[in-house]
Length: 185
Image (cartoon, rainbow, N blue to C red; front, side, top):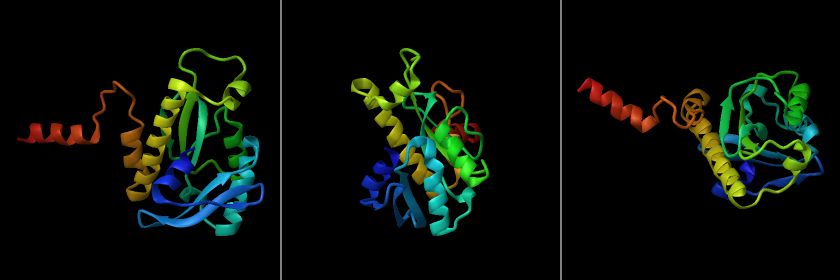
């Protein structure tokens, strides 16, 4: 959903490459990028990344993998510079095909905030409705904003802004500027 949101914002249409992926090489924020959406089963997402790497020959550390994650609260996002797959089998496939876990990733939370579900497979395949869908959409919009900010700035600054938890003692960007000015005056 996040790739669709990025494409919508920049009026980009992805082209299909069989049953493996849909992609488009383009420019966003003055940067050359390849937007891609795997069309494989989630557990085989690494095949699409492998195909892209063969087509465009990029360093894995230069890609950003965006995916949903049952281990994060619905609608929240987390950005990491590198890391393990956690419980996500699609990310496990990407790491296996890349031969490294040293690449950035942006996770969008899909965990049900009301109750834990015993049947995770049924939960992740069932479309969300109502408030749950709206909360997921908020996460997708935040993820698209974060991806664009990574292109405009860098991953570390973006992580400092978007990885902030609600009710955190960390200050938002504008709050930090105001707070610093008050101390210095």
